[in-house]
Length: 240
Length: 240
Image 1 (cartoon, rainbow over the protein chains, first blue to last red):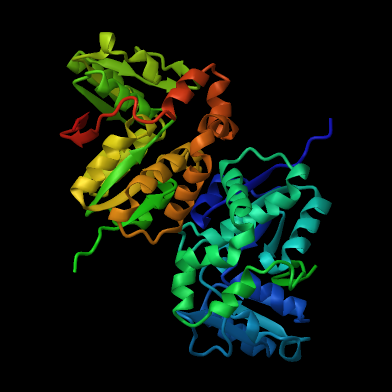
Image 2 (cartoon, rainbow over the protein chains, first blue to last red):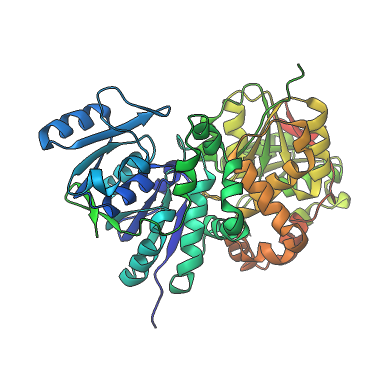
């Protein structure tokens, strides 16, 4: 009997501990905006992206590696760092061949949790690299955890919608008995044709659009415009 | 300015600590089946329902109060207790005037968490008492937390759908900036006309229907057939 691998969706970092990730590919999802920025930088030729937990680590590592440092709090570049967390800051003309050291509030935290829990493989996903993620998950044929980074542990819709988009594309290859996944797919199917309008109802849109980031946010929910597979190896995300 | 009270939906007990419940009415939701059984027992004239955390407490309190004891694990009455966790076990002919001491895995846990965190008021909700819950929340005009009991801390759809039903009925009276609530309302609106079919896709249905509980589960998602308000006072839920 050819048993299909199992797929689960995890709606908040607080719920990751309910799952065994040791035999799974964990997809870190932080649509607004860490995983969108990571996909964009790698798509545009960055050598690697190093996600770090603290501002201090970001500064120290940037110095050591002569790398670009980036991070935001409340829509502004963090003092001591060079750039922010907008995909638009990383065109090919700037980032090609460089190393980016990135610190973010939610996505970085979940990524390190998954590594600490012994995930078999960690990749990152968002609408701009939807196809690359789906293709990889089908090819690997392992168990999958779709990990939503949420916002300070609170459920968010944009990460859930991306989980739904993945499920909608690959579900026939997996066994899915998980209410979070059922819900995520329903929400994606309900809103895939009005995603730019719907996303404006979310709490994260309200928070970030007050910083003038509407164009950024629309980019982050556009499918397959930075279609690369960021995969974590030896301390960094590289194009897989 | 007449500011509306704030409503939040909490999708798992693990996420309750992200909220301040001290000035809120907390609605404990455990559709399959604790809060459906509580509503039914009180609707049918039970004097009170005492939710307890452990089987030992249930036995001891049942003895002390000469009360009916109830609780299930894996679809069977727990050894040492008298009845199970099915609403169908508590018709008026049996439960009227009696005290029911009930232990359950998920709903009881969340209820005690909300009490420990200093909730202003704790009530219980499920489809059979939807109108009573909605009417009470509008009348009180306080902040509201819709607390889904989930299953062993994992997100579940039946509790989320009930949260969505409440929101759909009362949202004009509240300020709602909460992605969980947006999602819950969307899911309810999407499935309210096919709820008996949709609910059969959930993990909890699969678990409980394997014990032959389909009729029970359909009852639990039927609106307003045990329309009473269970309210927690002095250690017990009574008809409010």
